[in-house]
Length: 127
Image (cartoon, rainbow, N blue to C red; front, side, top):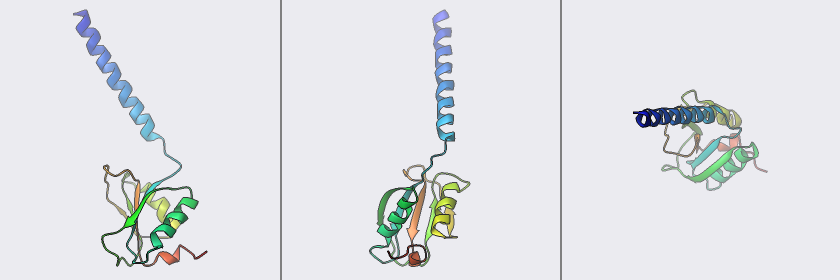
């Protein structure tokens, strides 16, 4: 009987410990935002220029690729992790974009997806 009680107590202890550690780690906000960039502008260099721009502002650009469509008029910022759109608001502010959407997708390893539109030159100046 003592062994069963000890086993149950140990399992409960480790479950509580796991939940506590997980809560603490998720509570800590990172200083950077993980960003995926999809180029939908039809301009070959727009994705890379946007990535460079965001990296200069201490964001972690995970990947750059082409959007399924290359006729996006306005740049879109899509929140992927938080319903309060905290990451998307930060990136949208840096890009001076007002087009923020929330499509939570925990299977992606990003906080935000930026779909670069034809208006990208409003925030990316030629150097």
